[in-house]
Image (cartoon, rainbow, N blue to C red; front, side, top):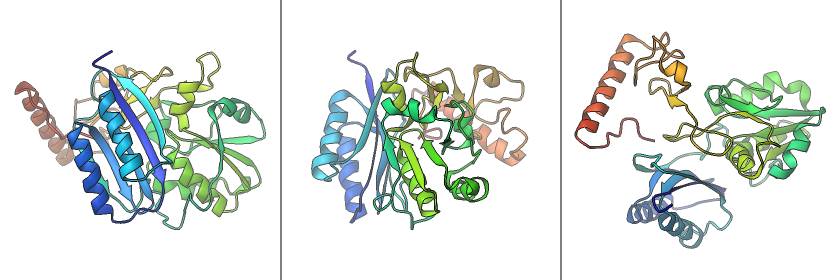
Length: 305
Protein backbone atom coordinates (compact mmCIF):
# COMPACT_ATOMS: atom_id res chain seq x y z
CA UNK A 1 0.00 0.00 0.00
CA UNK A 2 1.31 3.50 -0.78
CA UNK A 3 1.06 4.80 2.80
CA UNK A 4 2.84 1.79 4.30
CA UNK A 5 5.64 2.72 6.70
CA UNK A 6 8.81 0.63 6.79
CA UNK A 7 10.38 0.03 10.21
CA UNK A 8 14.04 -0.97 9.92
CA UNK A 9 15.97 -2.49 12.83
CA UNK A 10 19.72 -2.60 12.27
CA UNK A 11 23.03 -3.05 14.04
CA UNK A 12 26.66 -3.87 13.38
CA UNK A 13 29.58 -4.39 15.71
CA UNK A 14 32.59 -2.78 14.06
CA UNK A 15 35.30 -0.37 15.25
CA UNK A 16 34.17 3.19 14.54
CA UNK A 17 36.17 6.40 14.71
CA UNK A 18 35.39 10.12 14.32
CA UNK A 19 31.96 9.51 15.82
CA UNK A 20 30.81 13.13 15.66
CA UNK A 21 31.39 13.21 11.92
CA UNK A 22 29.51 9.93 11.51
CA UNK A 23 26.69 11.33 13.61
CA UNK A 24 26.40 14.43 11.43
CA UNK A 25 26.51 12.45 8.18
CA UNK A 26 23.78 10.11 9.38
CA UNK A 27 21.67 12.95 10.79
CA UNK A 28 21.85 14.85 7.49
CA UNK A 29 20.78 11.75 5.54
CA UNK A 30 17.87 10.99 7.88
CA UNK A 31 16.63 14.57 7.88
CA UNK A 32 16.80 14.77 4.09
CA UNK A 33 14.64 11.66 3.76
CA UNK A 34 12.25 12.45 6.66
CA UNK A 35 13.33 9.42 8.67
CA UNK A 36 12.42 9.12 12.35
CA UNK A 37 13.65 6.83 15.11
CA UNK A 38 16.70 6.32 17.29
CA UNK A 39 20.25 5.40 16.29
CA UNK A 40 23.12 4.83 18.73
CA UNK A 41 26.74 5.20 17.64
CA UNK A 42 29.66 4.03 19.80
CA UNK A 43 33.29 3.01 19.32
CA UNK A 44 32.07 -0.61 19.08
CA UNK A 45 29.48 -0.01 16.32
CA UNK A 46 25.97 1.15 15.46
CA UNK A 47 22.48 0.14 16.65
CA UNK A 48 19.11 1.60 15.77
CA UNK A 49 15.48 1.33 14.77
CA UNK A 50 14.10 3.85 12.29
CA UNK A 51 11.00 4.38 10.18
CA UNK A 52 10.15 5.99 6.87
CA UNK A 53 8.76 5.39 3.40
CA UNK A 54 10.19 2.67 1.18
CA UNK A 55 12.34 5.12 -0.84
CA UNK A 56 13.53 6.81 2.38
CA UNK A 57 14.64 3.59 4.06
CA UNK A 58 16.32 2.43 0.86
CA UNK A 59 18.25 5.72 0.73
CA UNK A 60 19.33 5.35 4.36
CA UNK A 61 20.50 1.78 3.81
CA UNK A 62 22.54 2.95 0.83
CA UNK A 63 24.10 5.69 2.98
CA UNK A 64 24.99 3.23 5.74
CA UNK A 65 26.50 0.67 3.39
CA UNK A 66 28.30 3.01 0.99
CA UNK A 67 29.08 6.30 2.74
CA UNK A 68 29.63 4.85 6.21
CA UNK A 69 31.02 1.54 4.85
CA UNK A 70 28.80 -0.67 7.04
CA UNK A 71 28.46 -3.59 4.63
CA UNK A 72 27.80 -6.24 7.29
CA UNK A 73 24.66 -4.76 8.82
CA UNK A 74 22.30 -7.06 10.68
CA UNK A 75 19.12 -5.72 9.13
CA UNK A 76 15.39 -6.52 9.48
CA UNK A 77 12.18 -4.84 8.38
CA UNK A 78 8.59 -4.78 9.55
CA UNK A 79 5.68 -2.64 8.40
CA UNK A 80 2.88 -0.52 9.82
CA UNK A 81 0.40 2.15 8.75
CA UNK A 82 1.13 4.80 11.41
CA UNK A 83 4.58 6.10 12.23
CA UNK A 84 5.92 4.37 15.39
CA UNK A 85 8.35 7.23 16.14
CA UNK A 86 7.74 10.88 16.89
CA UNK A 87 11.17 12.28 16.08
CA UNK A 88 14.76 11.52 15.09
CA UNK A 89 17.52 10.97 17.66
CA UNK A 90 21.11 10.03 16.84
CA UNK A 91 23.15 9.61 20.01
CA UNK A 92 26.80 9.03 20.78
CA UNK A 93 27.28 6.34 23.46
CA UNK A 94 29.99 4.31 25.15
CA UNK A 95 28.22 1.08 24.12
CA UNK A 96 25.51 0.39 21.56
CA UNK A 97 23.96 -2.08 23.99
CA UNK A 98 24.84 -1.42 27.61
CA UNK A 99 26.24 -4.44 29.41
CA UNK A 100 28.52 -2.26 31.54
CA UNK A 101 31.70 -4.22 30.77
CA UNK A 102 33.66 -2.69 27.91
CA UNK A 103 36.12 -5.62 27.95
CA UNK A 104 33.50 -7.79 26.24
CA UNK A 105 34.03 -7.70 22.49
CA UNK A 106 31.73 -9.72 20.18
CA UNK A 107 34.20 -9.16 17.35
CA UNK A 108 36.73 -11.33 19.21
CA UNK A 109 34.52 -13.91 20.92
CA UNK A 110 30.88 -14.67 20.27
CA UNK A 111 28.47 -17.57 20.54
CA UNK A 112 27.39 -19.86 17.70
CA UNK A 113 24.66 -18.35 15.53
CA UNK A 114 21.54 -20.47 14.99
CA UNK A 115 19.17 -19.69 12.12
CA UNK A 116 15.45 -19.44 12.79
CA UNK A 117 14.88 -22.64 10.80
CA UNK A 118 17.11 -24.59 13.22
CA UNK A 119 15.96 -22.96 16.46
CA UNK A 120 13.03 -25.26 17.29
CA UNK A 121 15.14 -28.39 17.17
CA UNK A 122 17.76 -26.81 19.42
CA UNK A 123 15.41 -25.60 22.16
CA UNK A 124 13.41 -28.85 22.11
CA UNK A 125 16.58 -30.67 23.17
CA UNK A 126 16.09 -31.49 26.89
CA UNK A 127 19.82 -31.06 27.48
CA UNK A 128 19.75 -27.42 26.34
CA UNK A 129 19.17 -24.51 28.72
CA UNK A 130 17.05 -21.89 26.92
CA UNK A 131 17.89 -18.40 28.17
CA UNK A 132 15.98 -15.14 27.60
CA UNK A 133 18.42 -12.22 27.83
CA UNK A 134 15.73 -9.50 27.89
CA UNK A 135 14.36 -7.51 30.83
CA UNK A 136 11.31 -8.27 32.96
CA UNK A 137 8.87 -5.87 31.25
CA UNK A 138 9.69 -7.62 27.96
CA UNK A 139 9.61 -11.22 29.16
CA UNK A 140 6.35 -10.66 31.06
CA UNK A 141 4.37 -10.45 27.83
CA UNK A 142 6.08 -13.16 25.78
CA UNK A 143 8.88 -15.73 25.68
CA UNK A 144 9.90 -19.04 24.14
CA UNK A 145 8.64 -22.30 25.54
CA UNK A 146 10.61 -23.52 28.61
CA UNK A 147 12.86 -20.45 28.70
CA UNK A 148 14.79 -19.42 31.80
CA UNK A 149 13.72 -15.87 32.68
CA UNK A 150 16.34 -13.73 34.51
CA UNK A 151 13.80 -11.07 35.67
CA UNK A 152 16.42 -8.35 35.22
CA UNK A 153 15.26 -4.74 35.08
CA UNK A 154 18.18 -3.58 32.90
CA UNK A 155 20.75 -5.43 30.80
CA UNK A 156 23.52 -4.31 33.20
CA UNK A 157 22.09 -6.84 35.70
CA UNK A 158 22.60 -9.78 33.33
CA UNK A 159 26.24 -10.50 34.32
CA UNK A 160 25.32 -10.79 38.01
CA UNK A 161 22.42 -13.10 37.15
CA UNK A 162 24.74 -15.37 35.16
CA UNK A 163 27.40 -15.42 37.89
CA UNK A 164 24.97 -16.19 40.72
CA UNK A 165 22.20 -18.22 39.10
CA UNK A 166 23.86 -20.10 36.24
CA UNK A 167 27.34 -20.85 37.56
CA UNK A 168 26.47 -24.56 37.88
CA UNK A 169 25.61 -24.72 34.14
CA UNK A 170 29.01 -23.93 32.62
CA UNK A 171 29.15 -27.33 30.93
CA UNK A 172 25.49 -27.16 29.82
CA UNK A 173 24.56 -26.17 26.29
CA UNK A 174 22.98 -22.70 26.43
CA UNK A 175 20.64 -21.36 23.73
CA UNK A 176 19.89 -17.66 24.22
CA UNK A 177 17.67 -15.19 22.43
CA UNK A 178 16.63 -11.52 22.47
CA UNK A 179 14.47 -9.19 20.37
CA UNK A 180 16.70 -8.60 17.36
CA UNK A 181 19.96 -10.40 18.15
CA UNK A 182 22.17 -7.58 19.40
CA UNK A 183 21.96 -8.28 23.13
CA UNK A 184 22.90 -11.90 22.51
CA UNK A 185 26.09 -10.77 20.79
CA UNK A 186 27.22 -9.19 24.07
CA UNK A 187 25.61 -11.82 26.32
CA UNK A 188 27.15 -14.80 24.51
CA UNK A 189 30.57 -13.13 24.44
CA UNK A 190 30.30 -12.47 28.17
CA UNK A 191 29.25 -16.05 28.99
CA UNK A 192 32.10 -17.53 26.98
CA UNK A 193 34.45 -15.18 28.81
CA UNK A 194 33.01 -16.51 32.08
CA UNK A 195 33.86 -20.09 31.15
CA UNK A 196 30.62 -21.40 29.67
CA UNK A 197 31.62 -24.02 27.15
CA UNK A 198 28.81 -24.06 24.56
CA UNK A 199 26.69 -21.00 23.85
CA UNK A 200 24.25 -20.62 20.95
CA UNK A 201 22.15 -17.61 20.06
CA UNK A 202 19.21 -17.03 17.74
CA UNK A 203 20.40 -15.14 14.67
CA UNK A 204 18.17 -12.12 14.06
CA UNK A 205 16.39 -12.65 17.35
CA UNK A 206 12.68 -13.11 17.97
CA UNK A 207 11.73 -10.77 15.13
CA UNK A 208 13.55 -12.84 12.53
CA UNK A 209 12.14 -16.06 13.99
CA UNK A 210 8.56 -14.78 13.76
CA UNK A 211 9.19 -13.58 10.22
CA UNK A 212 10.41 -16.99 9.06
CA UNK A 213 8.34 -19.40 11.19
CA UNK A 214 4.73 -20.33 10.48
CA UNK A 215 2.31 -19.96 13.43
CA UNK A 216 1.64 -23.69 13.37
CA UNK A 217 5.34 -24.44 13.91
CA UNK A 218 6.19 -21.56 16.23
CA UNK A 219 7.34 -22.19 19.81
CA UNK A 220 6.95 -18.50 20.66
CA UNK A 221 4.34 -17.73 23.31
CA UNK A 222 2.74 -14.29 23.67
CA UNK A 223 3.79 -10.93 22.23
CA UNK A 224 7.20 -9.41 21.47
CA UNK A 225 7.99 -6.06 23.09
CA UNK A 226 9.50 -3.44 20.77
CA UNK A 227 11.02 -0.08 21.66
CA UNK A 228 8.67 2.21 19.77
CA UNK A 229 5.07 3.42 19.81
CA UNK A 230 3.77 0.02 18.63
CA UNK A 231 4.75 -1.36 22.09
CA UNK A 232 4.41 -5.04 21.14
CA UNK A 233 4.04 -7.20 18.05
CA UNK A 234 2.05 -10.40 17.65
CA UNK A 235 3.18 -13.60 15.94
CA UNK A 236 2.47 -12.04 12.52
CA UNK A 237 4.66 -9.00 13.40
CA UNK A 238 1.61 -6.75 13.60
CA UNK A 239 0.90 -4.39 16.52
CA UNK A 240 -0.68 -6.24 19.42
CA UNK A 241 -3.29 -4.83 21.83
CA UNK A 242 -0.78 -3.53 24.40
CA UNK A 243 -0.41 0.11 25.30
CA UNK A 244 2.34 1.49 27.53
CA UNK A 245 2.55 3.22 30.89
CA UNK A 246 4.62 6.38 30.50
CA UNK A 247 5.31 6.41 34.22
CA UNK A 248 7.28 3.12 34.24
CA UNK A 249 7.30 2.16 30.52
CA UNK A 250 5.70 -1.22 31.28
CA UNK A 251 3.44 -2.67 28.56
CA UNK A 252 -0.22 -2.79 29.60
CA UNK A 253 -2.97 -5.21 28.62
CA UNK A 254 -6.34 -3.62 27.80
CA UNK A 255 -7.51 -4.71 31.27
CA UNK A 256 -4.51 -3.09 32.99
CA UNK A 257 -5.06 0.10 31.00
CA UNK A 258 -8.60 0.24 32.43
CA UNK A 259 -7.59 -0.66 36.01
CA UNK A 260 -8.82 1.69 38.72
CA UNK A 261 -5.26 2.63 39.72
CA UNK A 262 -4.20 3.44 36.15
CA UNK A 263 -3.91 7.13 35.34
CA UNK A 264 -3.03 7.72 31.71
CA UNK A 265 0.52 8.99 31.35
CA UNK A 266 1.11 8.83 35.12
CA UNK A 267 0.95 5.35 36.67
CA UNK A 268 -0.40 1.83 36.29
CA UNK A 269 -0.81 -1.37 38.36
CA UNK A 270 2.93 -2.02 37.96
CA UNK A 271 4.16 1.30 39.35
CA UNK A 272 1.43 3.20 41.23
CA UNK A 273 2.93 2.24 44.60
CA UNK A 274 6.52 2.76 43.42
CA UNK A 275 6.48 6.43 42.39
CA UNK A 276 6.36 9.44 44.71
CA UNK A 277 3.63 12.12 44.71
CA UNK A 278 6.19 14.50 43.20
CA UNK A 279 6.89 12.10 40.33
CA UNK A 280 3.18 11.56 39.71
CA UNK A 281 2.64 15.32 39.61
CA UNK A 282 5.46 15.68 37.07
CA UNK A 283 4.07 12.88 34.93
CA UNK A 284 0.58 14.41 35.12
CA UNK A 285 1.89 17.75 33.89
CA UNK A 286 3.66 15.98 31.04
CA UNK A 287 0.41 14.25 30.05
CA UNK A 288 -1.43 17.57 30.22
CA UNK A 289 1.06 19.12 27.81
CA UNK A 290 0.66 16.10 25.53
CA UNK A 291 -3.08 16.60 25.35
CA UNK A 292 -2.74 20.34 24.79
CA UNK A 293 -0.39 19.66 21.91
CA UNK A 294 -2.88 17.25 20.37
CA UNK A 295 -5.69 19.81 20.51
CA UNK A 296 -3.43 22.26 18.67
CA UNK A 297 -2.61 19.62 16.06
CA UNK A 298 1.01 19.37 17.14
CA UNK A 299 3.23 16.47 18.21
CA UNK A 300 4.55 16.81 21.73
CA UNK A 301 7.89 15.04 22.24
CA UNK A 302 7.55 14.04 25.91
CA UNK A 303 6.48 10.52 24.95
CA UNK A 304 8.88 10.29 22.04
CA UNK A 305 11.38 7.53 21.43
